[in-house]
Length: 379
Image (cartoon, rainbow, N blue to C red; front, side, top):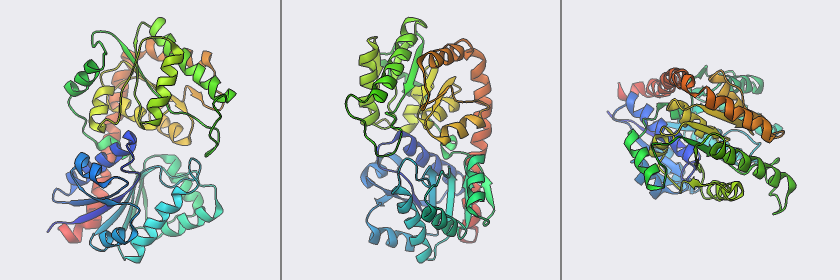
């Protein structure tokens, strides 16, 4: 007999990282439960149906959300960084609301492959602890999340560290990435350095003015890095926007300031194809977590810049540290990190591939945990 799950996360917003998370969850779940039926809460249900081949409904239509929950066997909340209130003070209450709704519908809840925290608000901390302690299963992607849940007082169910669901995703063939790069002007016979950047603001909600000194300083550092990649390392410069149009617009500002030939990949691009694209470059310099994950998946040497604890947590899984922190980033330090990674890139590839394979095995365990919850239904 087939089973049905509802999945909630940051889906339908054209964020390549979160769409990759959903694709990874689907791959892991269907590998463990082949006849599984999946419905996804999405901001753009039609795009989610088309891209992922699953049922979808609008995430903000609560009557429909409740109706979907009433016909499912397990509610899955994951993955990504849903339960934190640093980059957004409101979204955590949306995701807590979905857990509460599932509980009202008497449906078992699986918190899946998530990065938990930081959670600052006392109200959010208490609500998270209360709802997580009533979950049927919890898996997290890194040790820091285990520590956060312990500090919150989450004692049950047993929490398992797996890995980011993206590691379970099967990318498109390498030829797809090559075709995309060739179409946009990248010469596959020359080296290429990719940048996956986002506009950084010191505090959530504080949009800088057009002449904000901090914004201009950071823009100049990125431009210097792109110019260094082209002029000193002889590499083509590729910008990979993970969350268009914002990342795409910021990349164009950096490229203009750098005043060197550069390609800004237009988005959105399906995550499986984007991973294939990343597999064709020689080095990834990124603020975006999932751009770093894409690089690790493909054995591409990487330079990670931290603006959020999730970057540090992922790099620790690779036995690496951030090249710089956004709160104190300086051009000389970043250029040195890029040069060092560039010089060591041949040896880095094999090491990253080994670590990525281990993380893939862990990510697939998310599917096994779901299967154990569904066992009476599909057994």
